[in-house]
Image 1 (tube, rainbow, N blue to C red):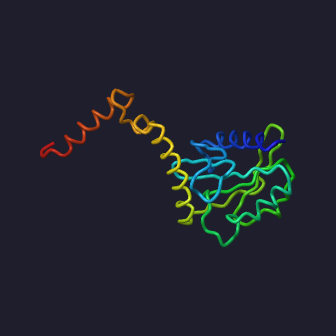
Image 2: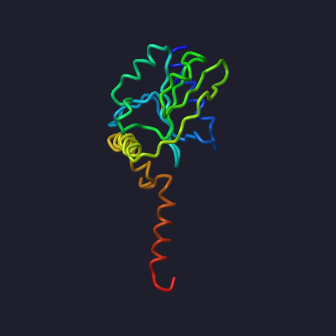
Image 3: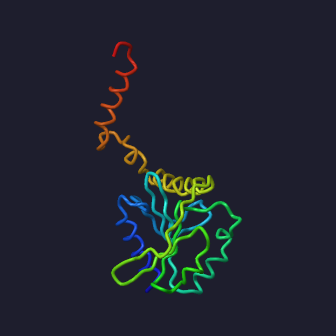
Length: 176
């Protein structure tokens, strides 16, 4: 199984987590940002982020452990939940570092071998802000921001924006 195939399977797994702990509505792969790492997969929901690192060999996994942002004393890390995803039985559960989960990729399914604990350290949010900033910055540079935030004149949100402005104005008037 290739790295690209593992990423594709991991994205599909995250998409199927609707309404569950690892649910993600926005999923990015190998996204370069101002954050300290480039995760293979990062999923966002309104209350959660999930990072999945895909490993196709034990040597790749061991090399990953040596990266600066994997050191236990480094606080700036992405993901409320962090997983390693590998072909079934490639990485033994006892090799997984504390704070990480393990997913096995089988033909036709992915199984959770170790659930990923939740990380709510402030540094997690700081790293996520860097990813979100990178997304917003790219949208702004490409001129997409007005349509994304609904400020495009005559765009699909224009009618809603006008009615919302009227509603707010009415709320501010005395006796309304």
